[in-house]
Image 1 (tube, helix red, strand yellow):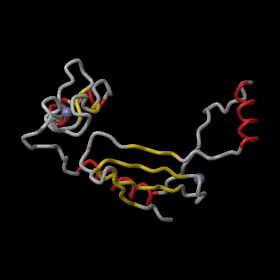
Image 2: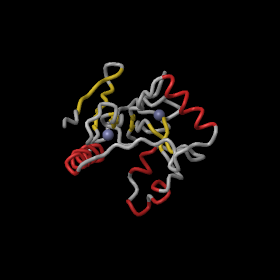
Image 3: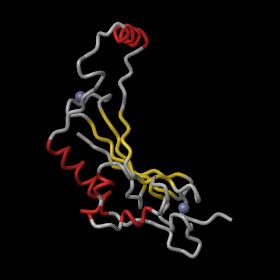
Image 4: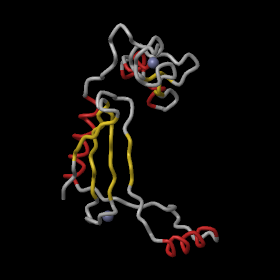
Length: 163
Ligand SMILES: [Zn+2]
Ligand SMILES: [Zn+2]
């Protein structure tokens, strides 16, 4: 079973690293892709392949849904990960967590995010730098999801002052 790791780039500068994880059942429609921007530790993206059930099956499914014939767990699909796959996934996630952050440290660094490209979703919208540098035990509001990084509105996520 191959779980492919590959990179793509956008605008010729931002690299995105991906891993495609396949289900243990080897069905080609059971897979998801986990991605992150190289140098950015703020978020990962998970793209899940949604099985194409075809129009008529989809219609039957929709009608059943309307009349309340739902699985008690809703419309979930399941992807089975064996221990080897979990290990590969763990390595990918650790790689993401341990990568150096490519913040803009130049003289043209954005005055709001200080070159970090992200700010907190707080009233002050301060640079994510302050939150990232906090010791782990102080990050409880981050872990609870109360404070999140968002794209810096001043520089649009470039980390540079626009002129
Ligand atoms: Zn499967
Ligand atoms: Zn900025």
